[in-house]
Image 1 (cartoon, rainbow over the protein chains, first blue to last red):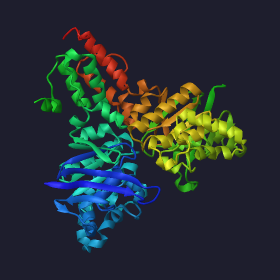
Image 2 (spheres, rainbow over the protein chains, first blue to last red; image 1 turned 180 degrees about the vertical axis):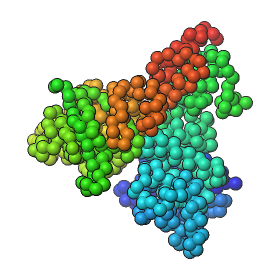
Image 3 (spheres, helix red, strand yellow; image 1 turned 90 degrees about the vertical axis):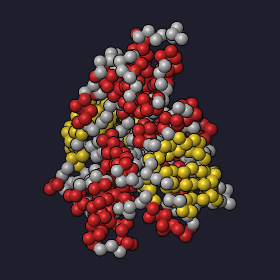
Image 4 (cartoon, chains in turn red, blue; image 1 turned 135 degrees about the horizontal axis):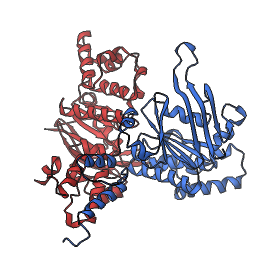
Length: 295
Length: 291
C-alpha cells in the first residue's frame, strides 16, 4: 500500500511580491507503507517546505497529495495531522508542560479520552520511545538532551500517526544520544509498522537506516532509489553540495586505484567494508548486504 | 610562559549561587591553551563543554578560580571588552547570530562599536570578505545565504575584529555536508595562515581527528587532554566520554581484530584509503599489470 503519494506539487513563498521564491517545483514521488525513507538535500533545497506539505501545514499551489490512497483537500487538514506526525528540528524547545506525562498527553486533549485511556496511550507512547516509567512524573527540565527529544517524539507518537516525519532528529546530540534516537526511529518503523520519513544531513545515518532515499535539489527531486543506487553517484551528489558515506568514498577510490582487484564501489557501512577487504584479500567471502546485492 | 594564551587555574563554575543545591557545571579545571593551537573539545550533552567555552571570553566568570586570556584576568571588568575582542565565538545556529541587513552590514556591526574610521572599516570588511570567500555576496541579504555561508558571514564579523582566537561552539551542528566542510576548511585555514588559535567544540569525531589536541569533558571535569590518535586508541576513554570511533578507525579496528595487518594511524578517510592501498599493494595488486 502507498502511504504517501505526492503528485506534481509546486509551492511559491511570498507570491506576487519582489521576494517571490519558488521553493518546490513539480515534485512527485511515492512512499510505501511501513518503509523507512530518507530525504537528503543541501540547506535551502526545499526539504522543510516539502515535509510541511505532508500534514497540511502548507498547501501546494498546484498538484495533489494522497495519504493512504486518499486525495487530501484543504478541508482535510485535521485528518492529515492525525495521520501524519511531524517532529521538527530541536523539538525539545517545544516542551512546556510541568511533567513528562503531561507533555506527552497534551496532544490527546481534543480526543475526550477517559483518564484511564489517556494513561494507557501515554504509557504506550513512552514505552515505544524508550522512556522508563519513572520518567513520566519528572520535570522535562531534569532530563538529558537525548531524553528530552524522546519526550518530544513521544508527544507525537501518542497520536498514533501512520506516518512519522522527523526533521534532523539527531542534530546537536552527542554520539550516544544520536545512536539512541536513530535506533528509536528505526524501531518505530520495524516493530510498530510506522512509515518513517527522516530528513538528515548525515549520509552515514541515511545509508544505514533508509530503505529508500529521495534526493532534493533546488526545489525538485534530483533522484530516488535505494541507498546503494543513490550513493553510486558520488560526483553528482557532491555537485549538489551533498556527499557519500565515508566508506563509499574510500572504496570507490580504492576501486579506481586497483581496477584489477575487482573492488566494489557501492560499500555503505563499516561492516560491509570489512567484509569487502576480507573478500578481496581472499580471507573470506562477501557477506551481509554486499552479498545480497551481488546476487 | 609567553605562549600560554588561555589559562584556567582551578576553575569551578556554578549556574546557581544558592548554597544549598550548588552544582558545578565545571569543576576544578586546570587548562592551558597555547597560541596557534587547534584544540577540539568533546563530551556528552550537558557535560560542560559550552560552559567551558563561555569562560574563555568572559561571557561567564568563574565562581572559583581564575581564567586568564593573554595574561588578563577575565574577572577584571576593565578587561572584559578587550578579552571579548581577542576571543571571538561562533555559535550553533546560523540564524540567531546575524544582525545586519546585508553581509557587509553584518560584518560592520562589531566594527561600528569599537569606533573605527570609515576607511579602516572598509579595509577590514574587504579583508574579512576575502578571508571567508564571500566577496561576491557582500551585498546579499543574509537570509538568502546557505547555512555554511551564514556561518562564514558570522566568522567574517569576528575576523574583522582581528581576534587572536575563535571558539566554535558546535558551529557545524546544523549544516549540510558541504556547509560543514566549508566551515571546517575555513577554521583550519585561519589557524594555519593567520595563526589564529582555534577551539572547536564538537560532537563530530571527524572534526576531532583533524585537531592538534582534544580535551574530553565528563560531568564538568576534564578527564583527558591528549592527541586525537592517542584518544581513539583508548577504547575505555572513548566510551567513558560517550564518544564513538571515527568510521575509518572502526574499520581498521575490525580488520585488525580479524588478523589483517592494517598499518599506521587510521582516523580519517584519507588515512584509511592510504592504509588499505598499502595493504592491497603488498598483495601485488599494483597498477594495471593484473588486467
